[in-house]
Image 1 (cartoon, rainbow over the protein chains, first blue to last red):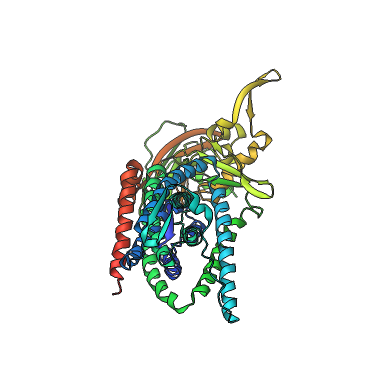
Image 2 (cartoon, helix red, strand yellow):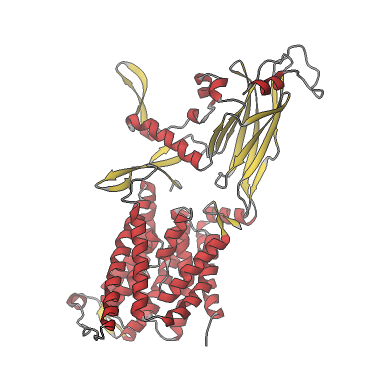
Length: 306
Length: 269
């Protein structure tokens, strides 16, 4: 059952796209991530032009994050103030990212930057997560206890000006690190078609030292605000948002996420992290492979005139 | 291979419905399309359009028929992967103008057998004769005392680039040249099929039907074909391109509402 996408101007198999949405939704519900990093490469692989895949993913990530953040909000696991500061940075980053992506498309370098970003960020983060989670699994097997948690926060976090109180997270830190972090993730969401949870969550835990219970809900809030803006900007500036594609993905994604969330309770936290790390690492390496292999066809037609 | 078909085509002309004509009148070609509009809907998976026509020639001279279908012009941006420091990177893109978004040349025998290089070049008949060029990459100057020399900053690679445009478009099913695409089905009566892929651009297509005798075009007809989006697809496309900001806001509002509705539907408490 093929369906013609009005903006992407290609026909896709509708059940396949819904199934893809469901599989990524399952993974996203299981690990508490957006799953954009997995979905965008898959869509490009299925023949959807990269600019359309990246832009339409913003709508899909916003919708799936919306469906999860409400549950976290009910449990009071969202730091609204921290979310607002991160989002303020995210807004700046989204504006810059959409313009940067537009410029890269004109230069014909959008594909390269997307591949390099995936290779760089996913393999570094996947590698670090894999090491950390395998270490935790090995320690548990040997019956050792976890090494004492170093709660020393980096000095520079306190040396910076513009300090602000975040009562929910029990933090009193400068607003500069969260602003910069938010802006960085905003740029990534425009370029890579991701929510940025895979960078935001570790950064909030290891750099900002937020309490673990607050991290996922707060990062979802930042992701919704940033991707909502990115989606509108991509539509306005680049006319690349395909609402039919986003809706198909959403239908599968919502159902998949619910089953994923239920399945996650069957695994230990460090095992889940190890599986996620492997997926992240593989996607990153696969996306970067094209940079090293000799292409069969040296010429490439670029889509759109920018 | 051409023999029996051509014999049929030119044996005895004209058929009964032909209007009374003076002796040895100029040969005339006539053609029509089975469909003049193609509607792109959600189930669009390409289309096949049949073109049929007839050659009227009281002198029954050997005739060749060439059908050229051109879609709306679409500038092409092309880049070449180059190895830089061990990595395959895209070069600066080159824009080729004058390239039709869709092109099909069909004839009853290979074009090179029908007419000379110069004639084909002038008519733009065949993928090798498409008037594609990269204006930003070339300029005309006087060299060695010869005026109007076309100089391309792409250098000797220019023809590699040009061939790549055609090769990639052929791969996407957008360009095609078929030396046996026109078939004579009865005396003077011929048909050709035009296959539009899913990626065919929307707009007005021109089908030029040419009658060749003795290597010269002696008669021609032009038919137009319109490919247009209809229904919801058209509404969304027009909305997204004419009012992109309101489309973007509405699409995002819809996505957020769908996410909220999903959380309400799956609420477990």
